[in-house]
Structure formats: C-alpha cells, structure tokens
Amino acid sequence: SMWTAKEDGKPLKDEDVLHQLPVGTTATFYFRDLGSQISWRTVFLTECIGPLFIYLMFYFRVPFIYAPKYDFTTSKHWVVHLACLCHSFHYVKRILETLFVHRFCQGTMPLRNIFKNCLYYWCFAVWMAYYINHPLYTPPYYGEQQVKTALGIFVFCQLGSFSIHITLRNLKPPGSKTKKIPYPTKNPFTWIFALVSCPNYTYEVGSWLGFTVMTQCVPVAFFTIVGFIQMTMWAKGKHRSYLREFKEYPTLRSPILPFVL
Image (cartoon, rainbow, N blue to C red):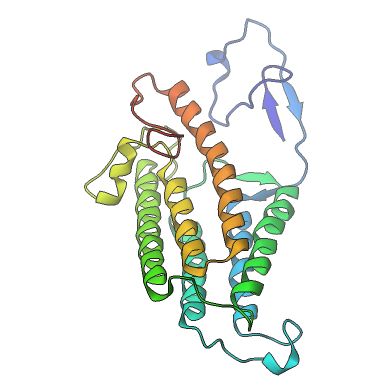
C-alpha cells in the first residue's frame, strides 16, 4: 500500500513530515493498495539462483536435455568450461552482493514482478546454456586469442561492477535516508563516475559483451542487447532523478555511456 498527497502524485515517503508537505491547511490524502508485496532482496536472490543452477544442469548435461549418449559427458572445448566458470562466478557474485553489499532504499516490490523478472533471467539462461553446452558447439572463430581477450574484458568489468557497488554502499550508512552524489574514489575502477551516472550498468553491459565475444553465441548477444536497452532506461531515470535532486550535479556525466548515452 502507499499514500499520496495527489490522486496521481508521487508516493509519500515513510519519513515525510505532514507540515512540511506542499499542501494547504486542509489536505486530502489518497490511499492505494498495491497488492501483495515481496522484498527486493528475495526478488534479487530468486533472479540469480535460478540461472546459476539452470546453467549447471546444461553444463553437466543432465538427462533429457541432449541425446541420451551425451548424458553426463563433458565438452572437449576448454572455452565451454571457462564460460561455465564465468557465468557461475557472475551469479554467485550477484547473490553475495545481494546478501552482504546492497542496501535497498525501498523495502518491497509487487509480488507479480518476481514472476516477470524470473521468467526473463531463467528463460535466457536456458537459451544460452543449451547452445554453449551443446555437443555440436564450435569454439569462437579467432580461437584462443578471442577467448583470452574476452575473458580480460569480463574480469575487468566484474571487478569494476563490484567496486561501484561498494562505493554506492559506502554512500549510504545503515538506516540513513539522505541521498548523496557518488564521486570517484581512490579505486581506479570508480573513476568512471567522472563521466557516467550509473557505471554499475556500464560494467554490467561490458561483462555480458565480454561473455558474448568469448562464447560467440547468438542467444548471449541477444541477452546483452536486451539488457543494454533495459539498463539504459534505468540509467536515464536515475540520471534524471540526480539532476532533479542536486543542483550541483556534475554536468559532464552521461547516464550509461560516456559522452554518448
């Protein structure tokens, strides 16, 4: 449920004080039932645990996925094992960050979102894992050099993503509701804050770009493009809210890609 001061207005925050709201001596407040709610943490964990186990089922070639003669066999290509390692690392990292790093401003979200989000992540995991772990999968065109370059991009972006999440966590002490502008720290991975409002999304897209080049797999490329479109929308929204909340917000910053987008 939520309260608003106008019929179609913004929801009131828990910490809002009545006499500080932009209303007259008499005011009408509107109550809206948002239906069943679920914690953000639960949604994030369910989103990530699914792809982790789904991918491993395809990697170990459990029965009924491929032809019976391939049950519990392993690929002869080392890039397939590396891809499994990278995919698993990404989702284990996200699970650990959800448990120990992220601080969620909003406590809950509508229950229906968990089905929508899980459908997105889980179905893509099935699509990607089926092709990468398929017995007929062929390694990337440029071989070892392509895989190693892509691995470098992936690892760099994973470290960058973790650095940004730690910086954002440090910006919000426990229980604090005050919002601050994130700035670069001594950590070089955070220097991108000088040019981008949401570098966590920039690094996330970079990670999947690396994974796409590493596996040279169409479903992964599609997942990267769809993710980039979605994250661009989120980044633009966050960028707009920064500009609205802070008059001194750095003018050089773009939402997700420096100088471009």
